[in-house]
Each structure stands twice: as structure tokens, then as C-alpha cells.
Amino acid sequence: MKKLLAILLAAVLLLGLLAGCASGRETLTILNWGDYMDPDIIKQFERENNVRIRYSTMASNEEMLVKLQAPDNVFDLCFPSDYIIERLIKLDLLHPLNKENIPNRANIGERFWAATDVFDPGNVYSVPYMWGTVGILYNEDKVDEPVDSWSILWDERYAGQVIMYDSVRDSIAVALLKLGFDINTRDADEVTQARDALIWQRKNIVKGYGTDEIKADMVNGKAALAVVYSGDAVYAMDENDTLNYSVPLEGSNLWFDNMIIPKTSKNKELAEKFINFLCDAEVAAQNTEYIGYSTPNDAAFVLLPAWLRACEAYNPPPDVWARTQVFRDLGDFARVFNEAWDAVMKS
Image (cartoon, rainbow, N blue to C red; front, side):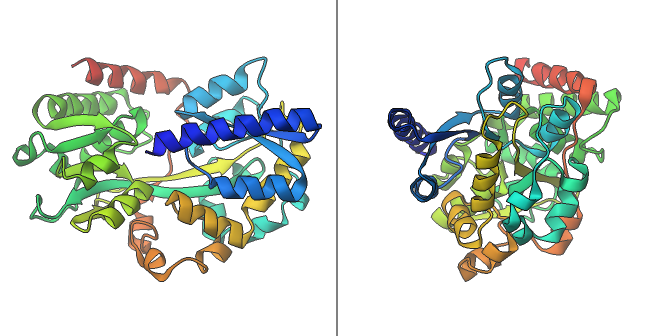
């Protein structure tokens, strides 16, 4: 359903683009994840500013990087994740943001600026959009023990009942954490150990690998445990009250998707105006409720329903936050991770 909505949204926005070209309106070209923005918010900005938005989607950060490096890149605003922003900065592919054009950035909480400063020192090039954790979504009717360690995903009692996330960084991170290693390790031997653990797990435990469809599978009782992003956990738990979410004690990834402007943008000021619009408290509250992922906008957070603010998957307590870390750009060492993941997928 999420992918269908993304396709329909893209079709509607493409028609809007064609109409905008015919009317001579200025066009803002966006690259974002599928179904990762409330369409009503897009329409509101178009209406209030007499502009058109062209909205394209991406399946991965790496796909976005390829698009931004292409000589015919046309994007004005993108929504990449933490570690890829670090790489984009190194490649000199981003515009520094004019903070005077984004006064609503004051609504972003200080702890989020501190966290994103790790990959964007001084927060020069990016503004936090959404954030969350990676953890285990589990069915309490199928799991009768504490879900507080990644090791449960290797427990033979759950053979054929575990879904892993189809992602190099996320799944290798799970194995690294289980083994007591850092998710940003540059030690090839540690990555090899994680690879071997994942190969054993695939042969003996794993039911399958997935992405967007995992939450539906869990809602429908097709597995006992799954690695998911916290926003998907919020959605799934709202649909099925037998589901719960845990960030294991060994730690996890604290991820951020941020707003950036490519250096090739022809509409930098309009892009900054849209960033400022998305940082408005009421707009950000509406957007986070539509998406289901956590907002870094403190002014928006207080406007959310009490049940959502109290949900630990959406708003993890300090002890959970303290045992998470942000993915860093691996540089050339990414090849070691990719080769390990290829070996897992071919096993």
C-alpha cells in the first residue's frame, strides 16, 4: 500500500509539474523516500507560494548519491541519511544553507542538532527532517521471553520465524552489535565475523529479508520477530496490539534523514523556503503523524496526540537514546561491508 501511494503521489505531482510548466510557475524539484511527506503539505506550499513541486523517489541513499553526481542532476532538495550526508560534504556536492532564510530551524531540539553535528559539523549543510532507531518488532503471542538482546534473532527456537532487514548497514550492524563490536568498525576481521554470523543465521533461522513489507507481515502474524525501523514499528503496533518493539541492550543505530540542497540546485532560495515551511510547528506535526516517523521538531512534538508522545518506539526514553549511535561514512572501507553482504546474500 505504501508503494502504491508513492506511485500515485508521483503521478499526481508529475501532472502538477506539467501544468506548472504551462503556467510559467517556478518549479521545485525534490528527491525523497517513497511516501515520506504528506501530499496535503505539498499542495499547501504550492498554493501559498504559487509554485509547483516535482517529487521523485529513491530506494536507497546510494541511488541518491549516483543521481546527485550525474551531470544532468536537476534536484533542488533531497532527504538523505546521516552517513551519506557526510560523504556528500566530502565530495563538495552541497550548498551551505543560509540560516537566515530558515528561521523555523529554531524549532529543532538541541539534542538533535548535537547528534547531527557528528556527520555535519556545525550543521552547515543540513536540517534534521525525521529520526528514529533500529530495533526488534516482535509478536508477544509467539515470543514468551524478554526481547532485550540481538542474540534472540539467532535462537533456533525461532527458526523460520525471523525477518531481517534487506540492508547492508542495518543487518551487518545487528550482527556486529551481537558480537560486541562497533557498528562503524574499520576492522575487517570483525566484519568477517559478522558476515559468518549472518550466513549461519540465513541458513538456519531466517524466514526472509524485506523492507517496507515487513510491517505488514508482522501485522498479519507471518513471523515472530523482525528487524525494523522504529517508525514502521509504531505503525505495526497501532494495527496489531500483540506486537511490541525493543531496542536491545547491546545498542543500536540512531538514524537521521536530513534536508539538504545540492550544489547544482537552480532554486536554492525556494528550497530554503520549503525547508523553513517543513520546520513550521503545525506543518511538522501534520507531517510526522502522516509518516509515522519521529520528528526532531520540539514545537511540533507538543502538538502530537498523547498516545504518540508516550509511545517508546516513537519517543524512546533516555536510556535507549544513550545506547545508540549514528552511522558514519565508511569511505573506501564500505567495500569490505559490501563484499560481506554479497557473501551473505549468495550463501
